[in-house]
Image (cartoon, rainbow, N blue to C red; front, side):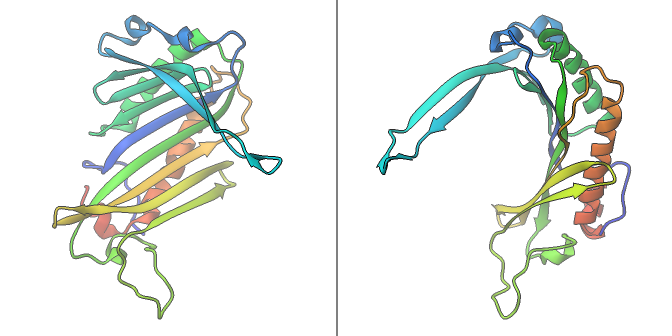
Length: 246
């Protein structure tokens, strides 16, 4: 386990996500969020309609049901370089793609756009919030995963121990913060012949909320989720792994 740092100068973050889920106010539709570029800022030049897809298939009276697919518009996505904002009928999501900067910058922009979402959607309640960070570490080869992961995947002996690929997904509850997290660790194909990529995907969230969209406790809730995410990140790695990104 690595000691916690307040900031990594070369953090391996490929995407940072701030997410709000809401109760939809009656009358809110996808086009409620059309044409927001002037309000968002001229840098948000790319606009894309967001759809949801629902597929139906199964059996009835012992016979297969003809598969059907239903597509419906649920909002708009606006992009400005590495910034991506989704305004949907069920919530708002802000993403900062690489290169990563700081939590303060990411959360400030997410909060600014959230206020615009609230003005447009006027949701009665926020029901779930989340902080998700996807990290991609490039590990030199040949390498022992135990040199980089605090708890590397393994099979009990006498099973073969030469690992080609792995995917591990764990969901944990944190009673002290009344929060939960989904933690995914996975390998990616070899990058050339000189490195492999390890994904550390941490989605810290708090659900079953019932708070107003302008409730002053929301920023503190996100800070708690960020703290949980950082705790898991540094606990997942060794000092050797973290030192590569200082």
